[in-house]
Image (cartoon, rainbow, N blue to C red; front, side, top):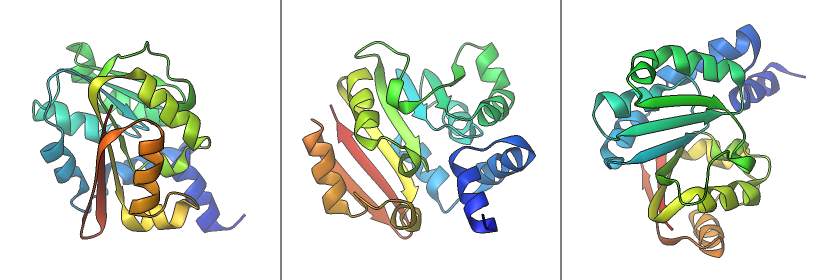
Amino acid sequence: MGLIEVLVRQSGKPTGMLGKFMVKIMNHMDSGLNKWIVEKIDYQGIVLEIGCGGGESILRLLKNEKADHIIGIDFSLDSVNVAKKKNAIYIKKNRADIIQGNVTALPFSQNYFDIIMAVRSHYFWADFEQAFKEIYRTLKQGGKLFIFSELYKIKYHMKNYNTDESMASFLKGMGFSNIMIENKDTIQCITAEK
């Protein structure tokens, strides 16, 4: 396996020393994306971040008073541990929880979240359709889904649903409405409502 494949795999599920290093890199990556997240997410209520990585988005949203409570979930235990450390003050204040889990089997009841977001993670989900069924199930009626990413990562990682049209059609087919896809320079925000 070549270096590029190793780094891509570590981006999807960081493990070990290299994984911890990748999580720290991802926390500091920005293409205007982190600023856009803080501008877009401004809701009181409960937020879920799927693929929370090292917890940078959670920290920024809570620091800026953009949500009452955020739960971060990540497939990688190493990412969870980094995110817990980064957000320790908010965990202690009962404003954040970080857990290990899989988007295809979210451990939450129906209609639980006001907002569900994914930042640089949806293109790593192994069972795309099951992941969105779980998102739809756990999102409250009228709740919003936000997906943020760099456009080149969508093109690189996704064989299907890698155009605005195909992604909008997929979301509509899953039951979402008011779908909006915004592309700003090299980054994208997908918004949809249950």
